[in-house]
Amino acid sequence: MITAFELKHKSKTIITSESWQKQMAKAFRDVNELLAYLELEPDDAKRSLYFPEHFKLLAPRPYVEKIKKADWDDPLLKQLLPLNLEQQTSDGFSVDPVGDSTAGIAKGVLQKYHGRVLLITTGACAVHCRYCFRRHFPYAESMVDKSHWQNTLDQLLADPDIHEVILSGGDPLMLPDERLAAMCADLAAIPHIKTLRFHTRLPLVLPQRINKGLLHWLDDLAIRKVMVIHANHANEIDDETGRALEALARHGVTLLNQSVLLRGVNDDAGVLINLSKRLFEFGVLPYYLHMLDKVQGAAHFDVDDAHALSLLKSLRQALPGYLTPKLVREISGERSKSSLE
Ligand SMILES: *Cc1c(COP(=O)(O)O)cnc(C)c1O
Ligand code: SF4
Image (cartoon, rainbow, N blue to C red; front, side):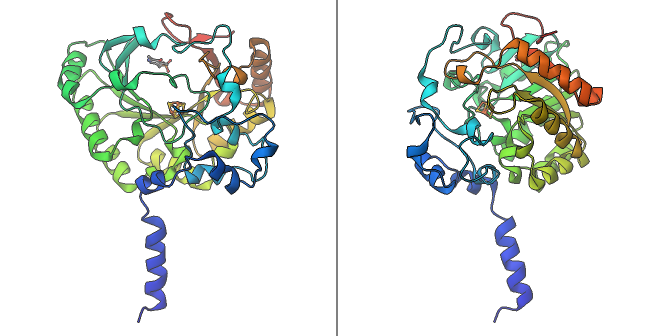
């Protein structure tokens, strides 16, 4: 016979022990299934749906649960639902809008700016963001891989100017802990590297990823750790995400946020003000508000400069300076991100 205590304990373990990998396996990959779950009729779609061959719908359930049912205009849904608009070509929009293809200094290693290198650690993401500037990135031939890893380390070791390594992708937190922890330990062992920075959306789209295993190896890394989460809207930060963020902060991770300014999602002063406030409830500081990178397929998200600058002005008037992000864009070939002001 199972006692009530055991039963309670058992059901609790079942809920909390579902690994993030299992959650990923259950993610929505079918547009019609997603729409049925959200109580939306495909026929009512204001704009026609798109069923792409590549860069298909991908949305984990914990993220989808934050979407309001029966609302085509939900700002989270808009970030992940493929629309026919993506097939339009627009002037100035290209497959490599930020010059990544010419910034490689080795396989999977990009350097555009002084002192910082960026590693393409994986092509995998937990969610396919329709505005992604790397949606056409040739990951297969441009990732750091195990066979080149020692070369990559040797190269970083040989350049004492490099003080920060940025782990990007894809999403670096899609790598298994063993792989990521080993990679980070190797980087942290290089004396002139002082900071490891992770760019990730996982605390927002799959907070279960911030588990004990991850926190444990982060603790063991004797190096400054920064995590830049990519939240675009306050609705992405529910209590579970909040707990994941607080856990990261307790384990010594500096938390920053980078948003992309997206038409129909967050191109509104009230929305951006709420986002800054919500981030700071969990100790996250706004870092960049990024203009859309002009990637083919994302033109319908573009916001013009004049509107962006007026939004920034409203943010300044409503928020303390430390909660006002820097409004920037990336211009291929420049030595830093460029401020719009
Ligand atoms: C954006 C970017 C960085 C980071 O720039 P910060 O201004 O330090 O945030 C570094 N390397 C590459 C290739 C980048 O695109
Ligand atoms: S998580 Fe980042 S890299 Fe992945 S699709 Fe979204 S924006 Fe692109």
